Length: 340
Image (cartoon, rainbow, N blue to C red):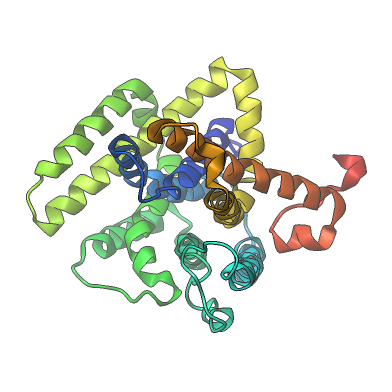
């Protein structure tokens, strides 16, 4: 079987990055219904991102020297991380006096970024994923993958705190979902099981477990098991919703595939564009003076979220057309004007 990247997985990644952008917009004035949606998104969107990363890795892996593999992942993940961190830190330092800056930084952030995601905590994903790519080549058979799955389960449930440096704490928590992504491609029976679950059934189960979570006993291992169940049903929902979108909606599929191509750029820079948009609304509050609070919130949320998705896409498209150097810095393939 030829191991190719499935269109539905790219659609799932696009949906996931949109959920990430939505999840990172949660102002203090948020109404209760939006807070609930935000919590539901946080219950599964990063496990989904890790799952998709593991699935794509296992589906597309090729024999390659370890040092070449690591260097490629460093170029794809860490160089864009450092580039984005420098930009975000610089913007925060320059604009903190004139605009409202969320999570302000100091000049020390320029060296702290080498071991902590100080530019924005959401960047923990990059550190954690890179660590996963450092170890996964040593588990490239089905037997070894089973061993890694056991290790990931132990790490996830072991009552021991890992340090925040290099995002080891997040690595401990999310390795399980990365490995599950690998397992779901490698083990045909797992794929068949996931495929048989209709996305609406998965959604209903997700909502049910999410509602019941508040009544869960305050026991660490039970809470972790419930969290895994919520995350897994959310993953299944998005995966099978993506298959439905691929089969039924050509136009939406094309849009989401373009979003997927730009997903890492969106991830790195969405908070910057969201921050600018929020700062503009705070600077010019009269723009919303004729709207009630609920309508004003919805309007601002739509504009902020859209800016977090659309502006990085525009930035990505401009860079890959006109600059080979900056394409390298954002981890994208330079296509040039003639090939686009």
